[in-house]
Length: 263
Image (cartoon, rainbow, N blue to C red; front, side, top):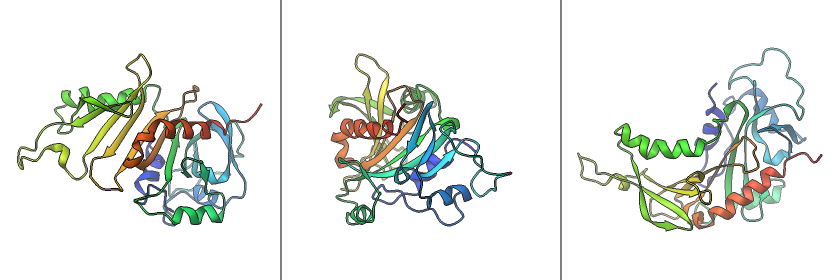
């Protein structure tokens, strides 16, 4: 099973509101399906740190060595402890108060919004076997800039002079030879925004946003936890909220770091 299976599927199967939706019966593994109905919090090790994750923040949780989707486990399920390595999970949370789907009223609150005004954001976390290694943000950025030029890709991002909310802006360059349409104007084209750690060229956040001029245009915001935990975090929200990227990143980080077991 490759590292992107759960992480990708979690956000491929999302509604336009950027919320995770229920997987079809049989799509996820039996164990993952069963966990959706557990009454207990999840325990494990997240990026080297023991954690207890409230059940409403532990959707579609997988541990290292869990069976692939659609496959049965050979032998009994091992007991889960704070040494069990977590490789992925996700949740929806309301920004800025960071309330999860912990009650029927909050579930109804999420449903009461539309794609044009929802404050709910989707979060996925990957670690363990799925973790792609330190510096993953810099590698992502390289692949779409210098790396794309070397590959002669049709999608090459080039840095712009202006900035937005402290973010360095990159646009897709070039024109479609067949239609004469700028590559940046295609329906699925995205703009790239990057935040760097102060005084360095190391990426702190990499954010892709749809550049369609519609209220529901979305952003995919990637970052790593700053406390040394080896975990990758992806947040999805409306482009209208991009100006709040730093507050969103800090709030989501604080929430996840709060899962750490108190010694």
